[in-house]
Length: 108
Image (cartoon, rainbow, N blue to C red; front, side, top):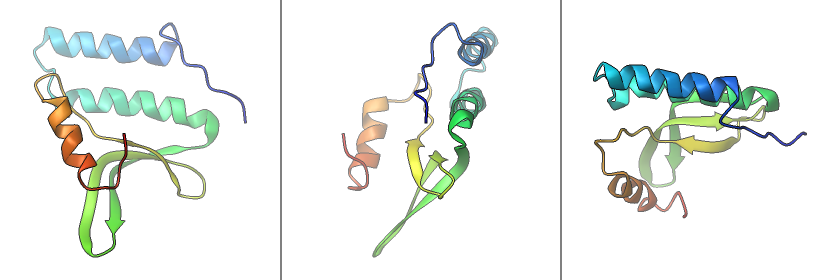
């Protein structure tokens, strides 16, 4: 497997930032809108590894209700390679992260 080197000058990254700028100008920069822009970037980045993005990914937990994250990047064996929780600039990112970390499922 090759190393994936993503640079700010690569087309998918430039497209992501262009989309964010357009949404910001129109005051459409809330989580629901910008979420699709990042999901598109993640899909393009996962493709070289034959990974894919699964939205609304559910994580089962023994003796507890499932935890749902906005997406997971999953490999060919359905093993999650990363989780994504969408937030916008109006959210308190630290507080939102702490909510997820207190589940014990994620580590810093």
